[in-house]
Image 1 (cartoon, rainbow, N blue to C red):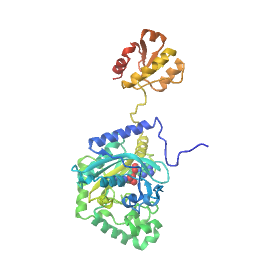
Image 2: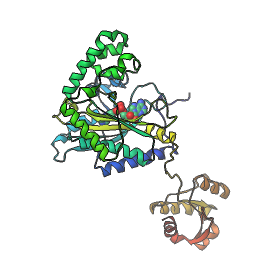
Image 3: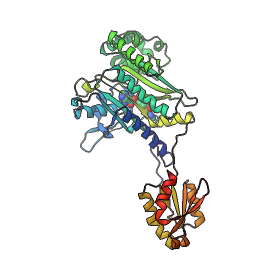
Image 4: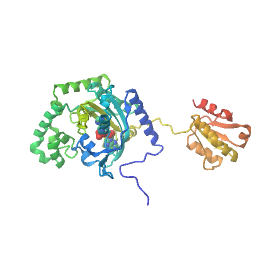
Length: 423
Ligand code: HAM
């Protein structure tokens, strides 16, 4: 019986994995420059964390979690996102007591959601995310957005659209919530069953409904921006002003609600405008979540962050026809001809590798012609041929593949020779 990979997951094979490594490296470099430090949390957490953290009226919690009982009967869940686990760790490790505030963290790792797989939507996907905890300066909202934009732009994406919104503070949200209830209440039976539940539990979620998206009540629903109190309005103005100062263009969309419950004030998404990108165009989502730390058992602490998946980022690069500068070739392939040379090629390739040269040799007992072909397939920059004659003279024949130039190099200086030519 042949096994198949689970639906909605993928193998990232050599040839493709170099792109992931490249993107991850650029993401880490950006975090280093913005002074965000890496955090690694477990792949699974107590289910309760997500019920509380992500919110029990969200699709994620209601439909998409990989939840299981462990052998001791505890309910565990594969993490569907990274914010709640980071906040759990922030509280548990008392990072709020650190004199260096805000605490700026990032993560790169797999997340799990039982969604209907389609282009850009997987059941296991890798998120790169950042979280800044402990500051409610609107400048940090702009900083976080700038980081996400920088990642996409530095990789060569051009067709990007940044959409922002404000959900306001608790008072503004309450006022808006009441306005939504008044708006939908009398005709709620025209909307789907989920929306009927949402009206009571979290009317804001109605605006995010995929089934009732085109219902006329949606277009006329009260806009959160009309319900922002003075403080929230001022905060949003500041965020927009900072984005403008940083030269980051944006659009305001009062319908941007986001699929998780913890947001207030700034929310944002970055979409791809590339033609043929497919139905799901959101590359990145984030926002402010003042109140979440308290919800998870810590002291009142503001927070903001974003997450984006590497899968959608790579799809956007494909859609825009951007090739990443990843090199898969090796520096030197050693071709050994004859028994003695074959033996000597073992310590020789070892020596090259120890010296930092990307080197390989034949392990299939191939003839010289086949070894040369193998070197070619590996895009070796140099091919070093070792035969009995060379061994007797203690030299090696080195061919530079780009020029075809051949040189006889003393065996004892092969490392220096290659290093100089490679630099
Ligand atoms: P989210 O909007 O649920 O937010 O997910 C963020 C990003 O993860 C999406 O924009 C998309 O790039 C990617 N993503 C989500 N689901 C999938 C999927 N099934 N397949 C592929 N990619 C996917 C969050 O997760 C929040 N924790 C973001 C955040 C951090 N907010 C504040 N801090």
